[in-house]
View (cartoon, rainbow over the protein chains, first blue to last red):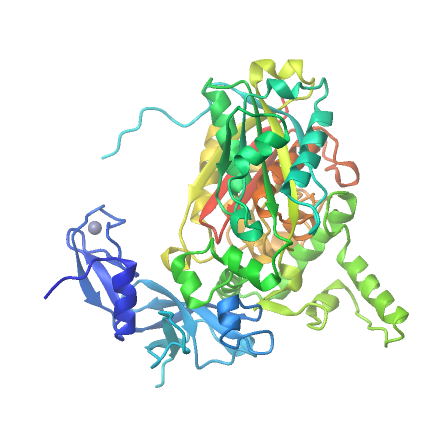
Length: 139
Length: 424
Ligand SMILES: [Zn+2]
């Protein structure tokens, strides 16, 4: 099987296929997410793909009321905010992602430390955009 | 395995002998040539014994993204022509909101290296010709591709940082009010400020507006009650609200740098570059600590080492308060207060103009304004004015005011600088 290059193009392709893929340095074992071509720890350039489990905890978040034009085009604005955040994944790496399944209009109800699970919507809000979504874990 | 020949330092001293800043605000019918001309002419006036502009050998110009904001790129030759510098070199530097401190640092190094003796550094930006949504997009371009793809804006990155800080130290949004109130208290004394108003002035203006319109007159117990009221202080990227965010601004700024041995021919009160540092860090996903900027810590370490100083030596500082939360973190990253104590120091008034560690005497980016490419040298100008005792009603009144500093942050923390100036 052909090994995809360890770059953002492959990262986005995998997301499109419903896979959360990290790179792991063959020399020192450092895990990188999103994937890296050059290991930041040992400068090694040989890596392999590792699939992440897609679970972790919410480390930071915000509810966006003043949205950039592409999000405005999707219907987000002062009346319809959306949440983005940082998720600390179980494997020890961090993801920045859209956070769904939370109350964007009452952001003070969202709790740091909440268990999160990756979420791959069928279509990414109808636009050509490879976004990463997390939602509170259901259990 | 690393090879290091010598420690970072200046091969010869560099002095700041002049500076200028345009009035900050929104000026759709003017452009960056107007702003820079205003700053440049003020700079010429500020040099005690005068300077012949023909003696300027080169310039470094910070600009983040006039390309996007105004549809015109390549501002080096435009500014060179404006001030009669053609055919001498003008180099544009880009480091998002830290663009003109990078220009300052390049200028310092060009003199320290012996290449030049007299160098102009500065920056320009015009943001008023775009809508707020477009400016949000334009600034967002300085975030990381992963942040942008997820839907993060600039305020969102700092909003997320705030929730991490709140959870870590058991505090809430109320701590941010102290930053905003403190910075706005300094602004009425800065004639260049975009909002030369205290938060109380905003309250009174709002009440007056309602009175004039015959509407019910709102009442707030104090400034904090006003800031809690989302009808006047709506969320931008919760917990960042309008009064947590610096405004969209136009402006230009510049400083005249000369080799130490020439300083005496320009002024009896030169201000010297004691230390300067610059660093990078990357976006939220790559941060070891969500409540610190690695680039700031690195830049500060370099600057302190170069100056042979510690945070205790700094008597006042400008810090990059693009968002209220950021100021609190900078206070900790720069070593002015221990981690987790920046919010308390602010709440106790330690960073007020009459406190032991005045921060953002200019009113900060929040009240003075933030024309991104012009901000770095505008901040350093404030330190220069303070050290020369020329800051008027916002003058720091410490005996023997000798050492001040300026911290500048670019993007979502990707580029940070720290500059220490000294009056000898
Ligand atoms: Zn490695």
